[in-house]
Image (tube, rainbow, N blue to C red; front, top):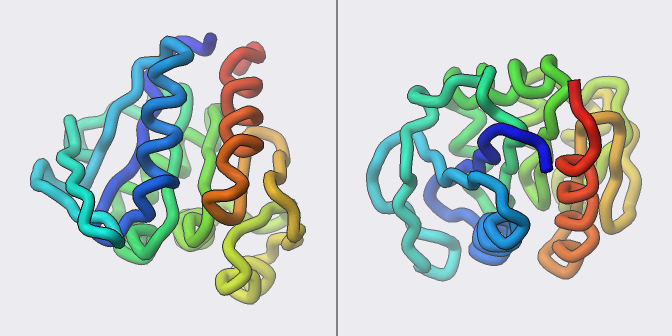
Length: 173
């Protein structure tokens, strides 16, 4: 398994399944998984489930990161407003490490400027945003384009995590 931290981003109105399924599944694989938010406060998911980040995003050293996972729901609309999130995503991506998102997560990729020229997927409601940002939208369960892994909805989580785990087991730069 790739050495380094797997960062799962969090903010209010996250999609519970899209955050907790990757979090626990990657722990099962033996990854060092860290829940990170803008602040060290309790966030609430779309259905009210609480999450308290272990670290603030500003405390993360991108050089120690093996992957960043962006859950869906409406938290990506909040996350993309924070320069420290965009910096973490940009630097992780530029290092060739895994950047993975699901559902509305492409909003963060768009704001970070890393989706142009990439094949990707996401929830159908963000398709136009993705295309307008220069991505080729593919309506399939999971799309892998280099170190970018994208998915659409909770039903796609098994395929999404399968690709993330495979990428973390492969040698990365």
